[in-house]
Picture 1 (cartoon, rainbow, N blue to C red):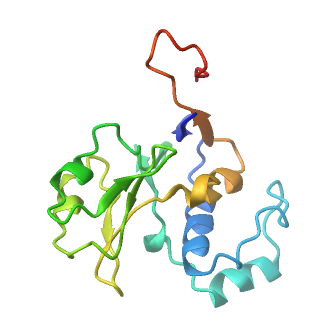
Picture 2 (picture 1 turned 180 degrees about the horizontal axis):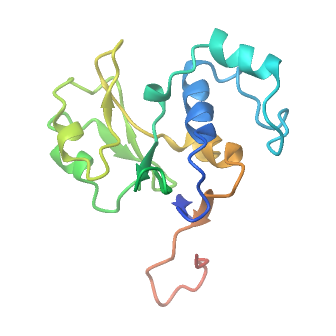
Length: 174
């Protein structure tokens, strides 16, 4: 059963908490404990101190929020882990691999830093890491996406991909 991140721009307020959580997970996986924080409250000063001391940087987030119509609405954009992934198809080093859950992941050891995948991503969600100079993208946080857990409105949620095999009805529908 394959899962993916589903977004709903009608619920997104553009608060950026998903980006905060994502970048915190990247900088220091232990710095962001979503279960510890009460998502319905404004973060307290200790939480804000943690954000700044551990290097919150929205540019590190592996998702983005597009603000449209002078901030009238906001659209969270995440990696689709495409079935026919352009990034995977164009990589000359074959650094992209699909794991058992169907997620498209980058094998950093194989990445040759050419940046072709960055150009071909339809969502513009593959970046060149400024430190390693290698391609990075959403890795679904090992199947437990931090952005999903952190979103206070439910605009980002984990859903089950529809099974395309008509003979097999084990796939749940979204």
